[in-house]
Image (cartoon, rainbow, N blue to C red; front, side, top):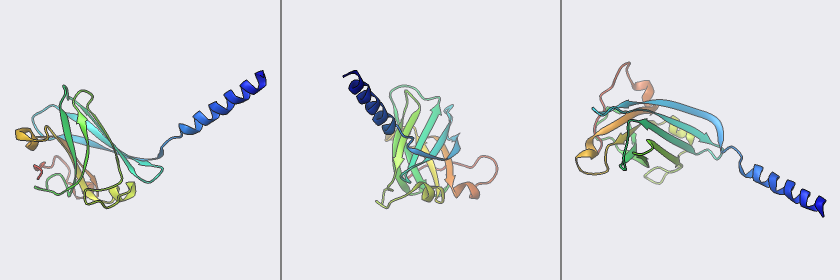
Length: 163
């Protein structure tokens, strides 16, 4: 009976280890989020490739606090483009943690997008102070991503307000 119990324990342990496989391929890109207003906000935007080809987007800000949820938009074009179309709404940054985690597989127009396609897109990410009201037009932080990096000049680019 002891041998049967040991065999079951080993079998359960193996099944648990298989369930904790790394969901990422190891491909990733990290962008610096620039402050977009007078708020003292800094951070990074990390985009990782998942084994299924989707993109996992992690925004990490320092300088946020409280219960506010800060909307995160993926826009087409670079950060200086005014009224840029929203390509996707990402998970808001929680003010209490400064973090947002999103697995992106579909854009707002319902077209599929992979990690590789996202990195070849001329786009940017903007993090807003609030979803509505006057705080909607305040950009806490932003970064060009994909091919928008190549179109950026050295130094700070003006960050335009969203639609």
